[in-house]
Length: 200
Image (tube, rainbow, N blue to C red; front, side):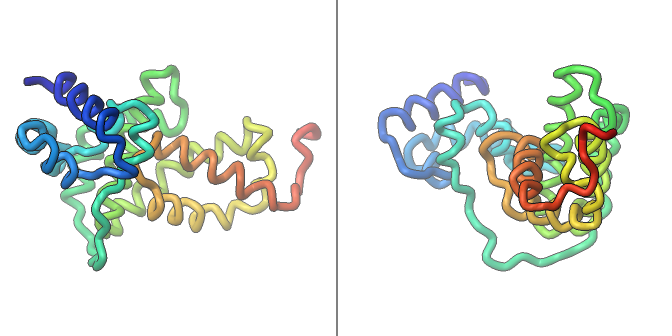
């Protein structure tokens, strides 16, 4: 058993059974040996089952059906150690939030951002602060270079709230950076453009 084989089995089951949604409990019920493998071998940097790695490996049509277990009661806390594990491991790659040089940098930015977002979704305030700080570099560059986000110029004070909303609502389909970009594009359409993009 390896990771690719496990993903193929999950994909085959999803194609055969065609559930409206699925989660870890569904995998445990229909493929307990696959769940056992994932539980033992597919772990995040902070030691939890890395369902993001699993869902990213699935076809997009299956990614959209992933419905993780909700946390009815979230306790907010400040834990530097969890965040430190991520920042220390990827310290040399944090520049990808400012100036990604290629696709590999963009993929690394995706990996780092999702890791921090998942910790923030557990209630870690420090993780939320760190991911907010990092993606602001990316967003500032977008506002300067992308016509679809130029309407945010002059409304930067609203961006932290948008980031926080994206952190809270992000699920498993696509990347967090992609989700953030689309959210800002859509919500930016309602802003009065303070500076014409063509005048800059």
